[in-house]
Length: 183
Ligand SMILES: [Zn+2]
Image (cartoon, rainbow, N blue to C red; front, side, top):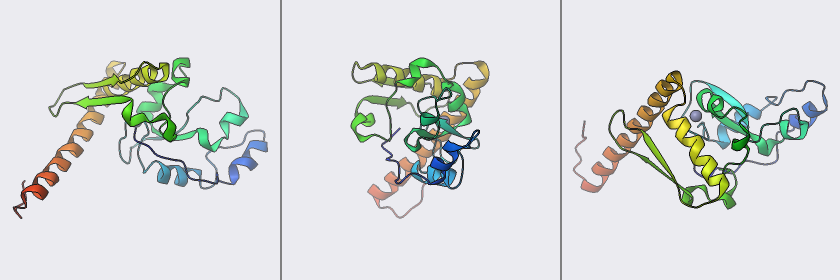
């Protein structure tokens, strides 16, 4: 959930679709723009190139056409996270990673120990309600809320660990300048 500002201006088709009776917010270049803005990562679990992609309404539109077609309200998420968040009212108020003022990186701490089966620990660094809600949602995303989702969460954590370990190896090689690859 690093800081990812949204590109502007909004895709032109959104204003047109908004006028239609059953307009589509996934119109024109919306998907490509989201993919670029979110660097092809789910904004919640940060899985890269997720197998399932959903366009999520950061604040659920619940039939409100302004929210439904508002470019600032469209986020890229994976199926797992979209499904975990659903439209639970408490998740209407979470930290917004596209807004620099929310300062997401300094308000929550992630901890995943680099061992298989270790759960993720997310900690709130201040008392604000949106920080608490975000922590609650991320705990659900990374650890699962049902037996099925727990398996999905385990896969997400494994992929993250793979990435961390790859990164650690590169750092090790870089700082030791051995010229030898660690396999
Ligand atoms: Zn996700």
